[in-house]
Length: 481
Image 1 (tube, rainbow, N blue to C red):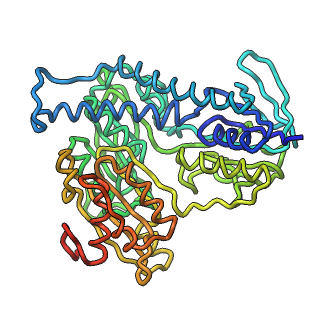
Image 2: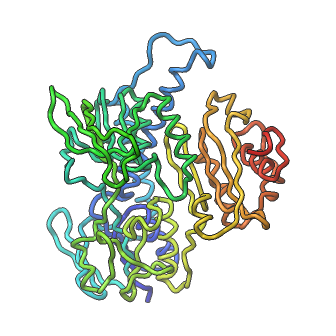
Image 3: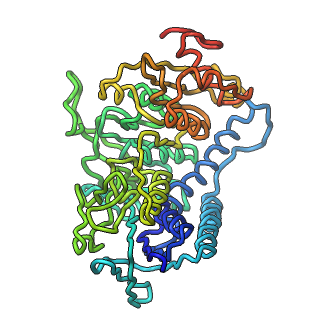
């Protein structure tokens, strides 16, 4: 008799785990309290990129004369049409996932799941009915939700979460975004292009304060955002928000997380806006799942602890995706990869998960992408490294597109010339980082990349130019710092 596998959570980690388990012959039940696809499909990756596609088209039309195009009038967005398109794209994706699950005979139940004990999961459906599911293996993919600041609580109307923004049918004239991380910077660029006056407040000393990004990459991104007219306030926090003349007055003050800079004024600042969007991280939704009935170990705010095989402390129970917390990158594509490994292990494999080559893509304008180690990370590991940069403006395709801002940076191990990490900023670099991921994963050397012929003219040529320059033999770049 085939194993009974129950997957709790239907996001990119959960539904992919269900698919792989079914492909391997298990009897699979997938329980999701809302809609298949989870945050990624409904409130994250897909809908934000629909908005970004429109934002980029608007930017291109605004520069139409430079591209030799004559159009009458000023292009503007229709938010109602935009939201209708977003819903259509999401529905197409959701329907496709449901068809795959059906073809593989995965039983999909909409409802709230709770662990009742070893081998038993209770489900309460939206109609109020209760069901009990037996399982031999349980995969937890319960995800996360936007973290709310006690001083700036969400109201869904004027103080918004990142999910709330995706339902707006009117573009705010003035928006303040709390948090200069990935989500905050992406929304800042989108809203600016759609016509909002945007302010970004970040408590730390740089935007995109990610371990995988070196400070010089953050500095370049900050410069480009400021050039676009986005106001950036670093080392600042929101002290309070109050009604003011039909809008919201946001009072900023110095970040308590950092030492004040010598001679820097610490006075508060007031900014008048129409909407405040809070993007300060995510929190788990593990409370109430019944993890304690199995002895599943958690840490921090309730993140589920797993080993290298994605197994929890409870026998037969695995966990994947955002439920594992920020000690790993919280990325949809990583959740899917974890889901496949967890499912394979549940069916008898013995695979450890390797986090050394996980790519990140940040859909700002310009885009940011990275994989592997940054210079700072490599140094902290005691590695002797070299690094080099190549500017995007040196690539013919970037000049053709009229998008020359950005750079590529490679970090390698001295002696072996093994590529340790790559950071990219520029147009469509999210499409280039896959090749870099393969290079890092396979332990490729600079010479391997330099000798790989790339088509001309393409943006991917920046990787060849970068590797030649890193080897001290630049073709179109200048050697040395």
